[in-house]
Image: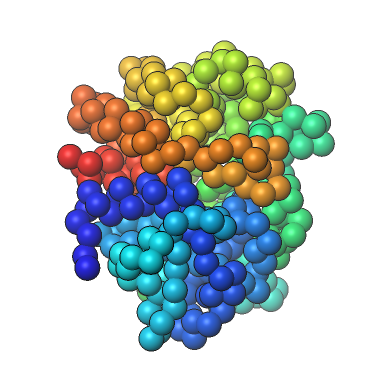
Length: 381
């Protein structure tokens, strides 16, 4: 059975809404190497460890990937039989599932012995980059965003990932992922945590970005997801360091929800300054090279839709992440959005993409916890 593209995106929507129930050690039975979860940012499934070897994503067909959310009681379930992973809905077989190929630049060592998979953070299944400064000062302030599980993740299952980046390691790792024959690199993905001040940002984010950019033979487009700076002069410094597009994710458009869900961003930076930072970034990087992400499922669908409309009218691109309740987070018991809620926003997003033909998604490939690329491709039409 082969699903068409529309059915496949609807399948992905359902998997992100309901998760999948399966034996936690299912993937340890698979002998062929695959790209297993790096736990760079979050831990989305309860009780999972590195030994369980969860794949980074599931491949559903039509170049569509999905996050793997283990949720007991879901009607979706996986079985491994005859060396094939099979997806079922209750007892009805739906289709086979494939796992992502392990990046060819993994399983190598830097000169100082650092494993490449501990420093190169791959977004989705094939977009390399780095997670710079994987810390957030909102946690010690007691004001972390409610959906975030970064602090616990990086101190447990993700503690093998590099947190302090030397110049030699950045330059060497960059050369490895650029020169390893594997796949074309359409975009380098850089994520940064939340430094307490701009000077830390310069030292821990902009400086490593500069090392990477100087080390690239081909100046591949580089996207940065970061917290906006206090001094907007840093925007020019990001550009000089090789950043070609940037995202400041406000997370929720509704002001009251922003205050409730992102207390640190509300109290220590502010909603209005966040929007000002996006406007200032647009002046530096140009129309639709700046993005603002919203988390679908944390506010009423209509509010997310209004947010998308608002930012697009300002020349700012849109991005999304479909909410998943991470076990170690303030919102661990918050319900995930239903399929109907996700699709309501997705169809509105599809219409907006048609009204703004010059708008692209951040990544030119499918990503695991969003359907932006699929919607932009026209999978719902």
